[in-house]
Image 1: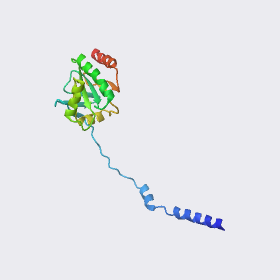
Image 2: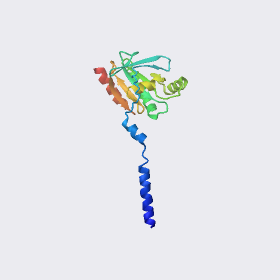
Image 3: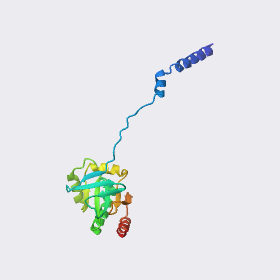
Image 4: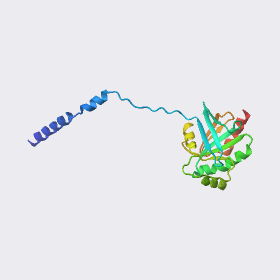
Length: 188
């Protein structure tokens, strides 16, 4: 007898809950939903403020990265942070490249670190004897995003004199490899 009561209550519960299906939900699924889509134009021009208060104007044009202040030179763009150990290890190599190829190459470092004052960055530059341009600008983040996103640091882009990306480097890169690539660009 107890079995029949449990079975009856179970069937009654199933029928009750099956009958509680909301008609509003069925109506919603038949209606087409209209979502507002915001179209955002890609930025193509950036002004990166350097620690010496100069401005580096960069323009994205087709597949090129044009650094307006250095139209006739190769540019090595480096994305870094002051807390990044591999970035610090790269600094002597970048200093040497800037010295050895000063007539043909410009190194521009783009800080990807928030809340750093110019005084902090100037102290960092002095500590490591940096001889190349270092920027500290919110536009650095936007620029990194527009060129495809910098997923890890250090990340570097070697641009030929026309602004075409010749090589992208992620992580620590042997100085010999960068020098070999610079020489290849110079030969073209």
